[in-house]
Image (cartoon, rainbow, N blue to C red):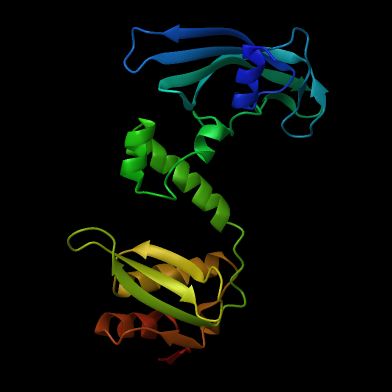
Amino acid sequence: MDCNQILLLGLGIEAPWKLVEQRLDMDKQPHELHLEVKAERGAKYPCPVCGQACSAHDFQEKTWRHWNFFQHHCYIHAPVPRVKCQEHGVKRVEVPWARKGSAFTLLFEQAALVREMSVNAAARIIEITDKRLWRIVEHYVGKAVSPFNLSDIEPVGLDEAASKRGRNYATVFIDTEKRQEPVVFATPGKGKQPLKQFSAFLDAHEGDPANIREAVFDMSPAFLSGVAEELPNPQVT
């Protein structure tokens, strides 16, 4: 196995794409490894709508940040084709190493450290801005949350917790009947506003605030008022 094959394996790149050039820029700090990827000449690409193999119509150069190669920042560059599908017209293909619209490879996004530490700390290690990392987190959280079906949720528990130093809070809602993965919703803030957001979240995920039969929380006036306004039928514990 030669070095190109090892790099392709590490990048998650498969045929018809191949590595055609590699360049280490020692003038940058940190140093940058640039990898040029192209498809085989005359290759056909799947239409992103129907999957039909189509010829390239034209190309657009794109760049993605990959996970660091040792201590060097790593970038993939490739001419991404548009195909002309007989049924769906001209469409930009989706490359196998990155999700649509992202400037990062899938392996880079999967390697993010935000499950183990704060976004700011992870961004410092990966050496990108925290805003760019937050966009990655928000995409995958949204993707995970979108299929939630809360039509059968009846008992909820809620409480606030300090999320940072000072007067910064988050309110968390749990399904008190679930023993595993009980968290249903979490939002910045405390008091009445999180109840309004939770009610809207239920509506957006096939739930119904009127189905909540029990609410468990501390007896703060703001929680009592918020539950009375947003959850019409629960027994308060």
